[in-house]
Length: 313
Image (cartoon, rainbow, N blue to C red):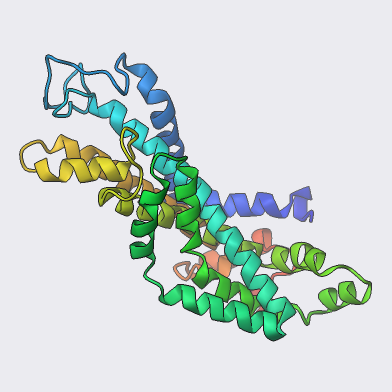
């Protein structure tokens, strides 16, 4: 919807996001990490399987920027390969987790009755199941197969909390006038859910998908750390951390670089999630002063939003 000056809602959301310095910092970090992960290996002549027989477990140098492993592999190339895998798994697994939650939660809330009872019971059962243990048991079954199956497993055990929230929101939305009008006009149930219910909670779903990216990366890293995730000869940040933690006192570069990349990635994703939350819901930012709120209200209020100044007037 166009607003003052012919600018739309997306422009205002982007403007709010950019004003959040931590969120902007997180976005820049993620972009730089992607560039480093995919372009960095081309800046060195070492390959993933290359072995430098003259340098075994040597520290960072001009030849090997992140040092070498005990087998002579270049640590920089391994770390960038691990960052590639972890980032891709997070970007696929996070939205997939939110999609599963949105589908099950909205169907349960809209249909109600026995469908709602069955789905809520299923959600409750999934919540009490030891997901980490089940993933550890199931992961060897998929050894040697595509890692995308591992992403599906991570998403299958991480959607329940969001599904309950989506169900609660659907219960309040399904009795709204625009939903009832669509229902009386003969619009099908799937179309009502996809075109009328879920778009009205898009802000929540976008934020949840962003936060789920960090959760998926941490889940994959944790499982890979214990040997249940990405399997050799492939690597991820979790496998590199698990391999290097035993030598952290004597050969710290084997642990510090992958661990640092992982921490930086999680922090950046969380900053982006916080920025999206504040941009989509400006009233969620409690740190703004009253003067700053009053100054930004007139030119940044989205259509349909009730501002603090309007209420006061």
